Length: 367
Image 1: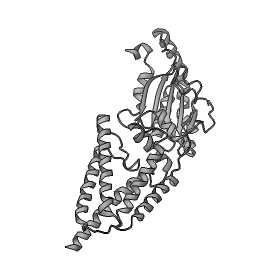
Image 2 (image 1 turned 90 degrees about the horizontal axis):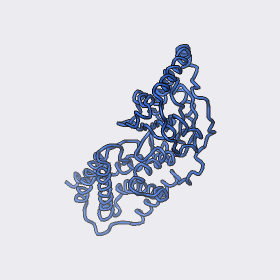
Image 3 (image 1 turned 135 degrees about the vertical axis):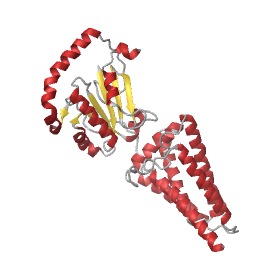
Image 4 (image 1 turned 135 degrees about the horizontal axis):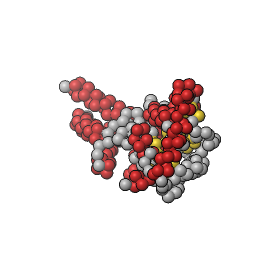
């Protein structure tokens, strides 16, 4: 019987330990373990900590310390010092706090959508799924607590503190805190001509496009004359620091990550739209400074090169908007936000829908 209890106890310890270690490492990962610690932890801060009131100054320290504690608990559950008297109760308490937080977030958002961030971007999990996972983990820890024998000597407490400080320090070393970005543009920002379409694309539809541009322009002029379109009042969108002429007339502003497949798909669709309609508003791109070396490949896949600038991870998430995700495609008219597509769910980019908005008069937009 004692052997069976020992086997069950070790199984529970390994399972819960794995959950904590994976949770910590996942918050430092994007697509693979530890592939982009700074990007992953910055995304965790913006999407999870900022939304519950953490300041930009305090969030980087809290996030790294929290992940260090998670990793320490995962490792310490596999040793016997102060296991029953201290570690298991602390772990249960931490999971209870997580459950409370997730419940609050679910209530605040009015639903069970999005990634809770428990396993970062590596393993997306909804708040309800995370709550169930934590409740199950608490149940296993309570059972483990009952299985472990009561001992008067709890062991060496210095082992706990040494592992804790070592893991926290390790997290700070893996994802150092970077100073706030003061200069958003880290690449030459040049207003390049629109429709720098790659040769592969031009070879397919060059003749068709050239034959229809004149007709399209004539139709557009007639349409404007007939409808007498009035423009919205000019406002400042806040993007002139990236693109000086962004608030003049109709513009399309995109928020992309160079290595994001969904962003590339959206860019490719926009290029296809431009090939079919030469009157499509000028397009500019704000890239996140994550895998910036992939930008040439991004434009090659998109089939065109557009004016772009690059900004750091946290400022990028901030200008994208609270609770929003990539790809972001925004239709601006004289600086006014007419339509904003973002993420890959209900609000995702839809070329046909954007085309409808682009051809609406200002009077129709106000209806």
